[in-house]
Length: 255
Image 1 (spheres, helix red, strand yellow):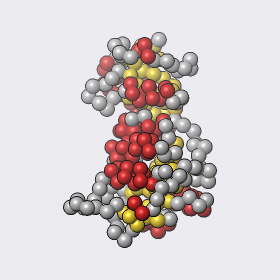
Image 2 (cartoon, rainbow, N blue to C red):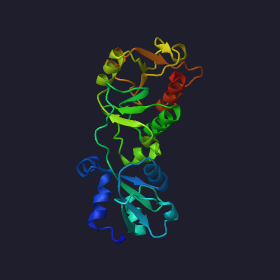
Image 3 (cartoon, helix red, strand yellow):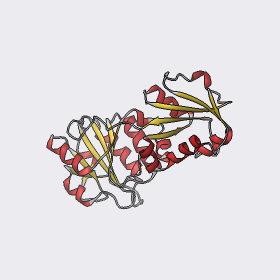
Image 4 (spheres, helix red, strand yellow):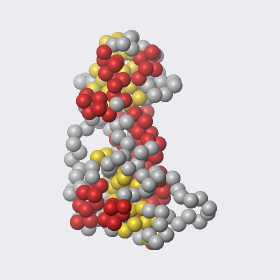
């Protein structure tokens, strides 16, 4: 097993660069940080190129790697250099970015969550985990969303990304394709003239669009949906957090 101890090592520098989107695209890889994420990736059959592990990583006996996966021992300094957390767990994985998803707007089935300009990694992670818990088929990241392989987004999704189809795409294209196939697309807006979310029943094949934290959904998309939904607020709060609202809507709509 190769051992790397210096943060100036070129391979370490390349792994560190994976925090940047342009480098992830260039290297066609992204970084997982922490045992839970690495374990979920292993269990779900992700293509793991390299596993990095400190000498005293406590779950070494549980590691079951494919023959093609490279295992490298790294120093504690390198672990601190690569991690976003103050106390790294001592394990990382370099994962190959999936090739173009086989799921398209024309063949997608089941329940889908469309993210329209959602930027906060914590919100995205909560929404993806909730979609996973609710039995959704996948999530589409529209334009102006935070990148799904950004380290904070990856960490926030907590492995649920391996249980769903994650796609990037133009939400107008996805919306029109779903509607053409008689699959309803529900928008969401803070507008009392919209339909209350509890008046539309439950569905199997459909999409739910959630908009940007500050500006809500794109107006052109709002006009293209099958129906736009509203969550009545009974107290004095002006609005709901987008991740909370998405959870209410997903569990209310999914059959």
